[in-house]
Length: 256
Image 1: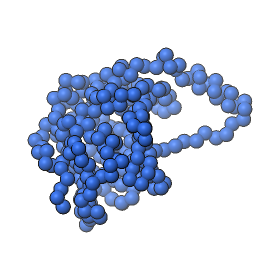
Image 2: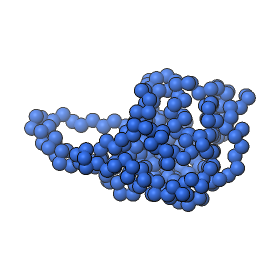
Image 3: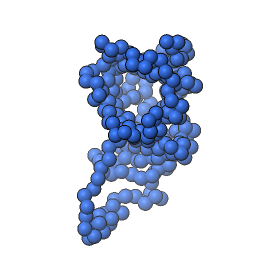
Image 4: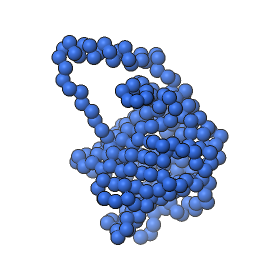
């Protein structure tokens, strides 16, 4: 997953002074920033409310994915179960299935290239955080140092930017719409198998689904590895079912 960096052109001294003045006028002082608890509460309400979220214990998503490194559109299935189990399966015709699973303790992959293998230990903290089923209700617990840093007014709508360093080698930024309260973007930096990975995910097309909660139906991910390899993904959700019976064994590492 990845990251898009932007660079401002060079300015003369007068231009820098003018820009600084304009930014100071447009950017709220720290005391004017919304409180974190208010931002998180608005998000929970925007997606359906705490009572509805707490009634959900599992989720099955059917959709499709497009990947820049592998041309084509492929079937995607994501299974999740509280508190922290997850399995994703991408089916590529003529190649096979690419599986990634987490059973609450162990993370693993299975695909025709490597067979079955454990995810590197360095990746586990990020996998564990992302697998939390009720993450919307647990931001304070999962990201103890999460704080509101700014309000980004550079785009079509103002975004409240929150930031956390959940461990010494990771950084997470969450961008919440000041208009709708919804999470619209997440920037992540974390350790991968071959070094640091930078990723950006954007969440679009929120719709109410089974269970009365709203989920994004279009997710775009850009990721850049430490070697500079970039990958783009587009995930499209077709169907969502909640409270489906899922055996814990579904998420365990296969024997082969």
